[in-house]
Image (cartoon, rainbow, N blue to C red; front, side, top):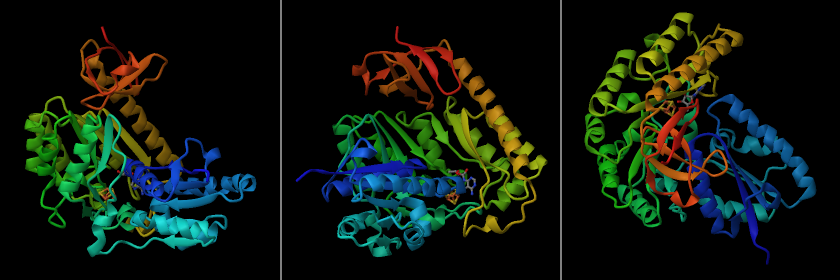
Length: 438
Ligand code: 5AD
Ligand code: SF4
């Protein structure tokens, strides 16, 4: 019999990238090998994101174009998973007649039966949340551990209910994976050549707090640092209100912990932060930044910022601009506010027009571009240590990232992947640095 093939399309965050790997591994168990191109596939899976409405709309567009593909290959199976699937459930099957199955963020482990049903011509939806007794089923062990860098899920879900955010509704309550399972996965990865791990979760610094997972986040970091072969540790995403003293201590004394933290601030205005239900104000945030810088002077900060939250005035927006300048982020990701179903903010009156929001967004982007160049500028003329990850931008180039998470391209042989190198930084571009190994 010919080998069946699946092509997985991933949208949204790193958590989805990690989930797609798990989906691939579960599907391999029921006879589907990954296919490099969609044209060869017998099954296509869309792993979706619903954090902003644009991301959600995109999925419907892609599903629509699948109709043409089905004409050429009538037996093609199509499944939708991830956050849009969780949000829409059965409705997706009703809206898209050529869709075969819908699975949510808590049902990856049910995929084998769903695929069998789909192969037998039954259309199925599984979007229930896992109950307490089965919570660890959320983390099916991934068979694959190869790669120089690896994303390792340590927890899922979010209990914070920021007023704009759909994540708590589509990912459910916080659940932490067992520390032993996490360390075991990382040990296996290190044995097969992995040098850097990124510990992943919607809210990593509340790891273990909700269910007594037998370790808190700082102890977990220390456990990972003890694994031979792992040279670098990163994590994302952490919430500013949960940065604990033990975590700051990790930045003080864990050499393997990289000098970068993604610490989304969302807004620089106290009024908006309160409306967002973020649990900290501008001064609290700046104090965190100061504490982290005092123990790790070269630490680089990145952030997410929402522009045009309901009721945001020009004055509030100016506060976001000034906070960007005060922190001097090496990078930030800005988003125009998008009302999401079920969230509290979606009910708030919003008088600011879209044009005005886009104009604010562009001003923020321009400021960040300037800051990125300024933050990177002192790196030119220095040797920075990078972990070589793979082929770079141009032919004959490799790329790596600095401890501060800046990308460096440099001419080198492919054999260097997985090694630490010290290129001399010679040019400063917006999205990367150019280095030389000489
Ligand atoms: N509108 C715009 N941006 C949002 N984000 C989350 N929800 C929304 C929304 N409703 C952004 C936040 C978050 C990032 C992943 O997406 O900045 O940190
Ligand atoms: Fe969403 Fe806030 Fe949870 Fe982040 S912390 S996932 S923004 S609710």
